[in-house]
Image: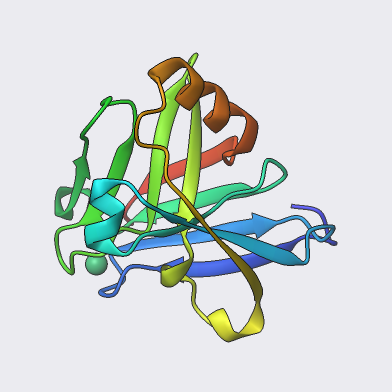
Length: 147
Ligand SMILES: [Zn+2]
């Protein structure tokens, strides 16, 4: 983390999944993508990522975290079994983990400026989907399990 970057703290509702998102200072506005896929429509997922950011996740009790997959099966939605909240999603591409974060799980969300857009990637083929994630998703992720 550079001194110029902003750490953003977030968590699921019960606190079992916590994260620090380091956001580059050169990107004052946080873009929010309201995903139109079948899961996100039902769940109200609102995602953000920046290729200059990094994500540090701590799972309090990993046994209470389930990974949900659907569709192309190339992404894992981390769902807290304690409270049902989905703070982030990861996709492993060529051995590298990429992530997007649910802005609804930010703490102190009022401190940040968001810009919203809607998108719908249904029908996109798997190759284009993975390419897009590599271009846009958070490329530095650390997931540690409980203390
Ligand atoms: Zn929870």
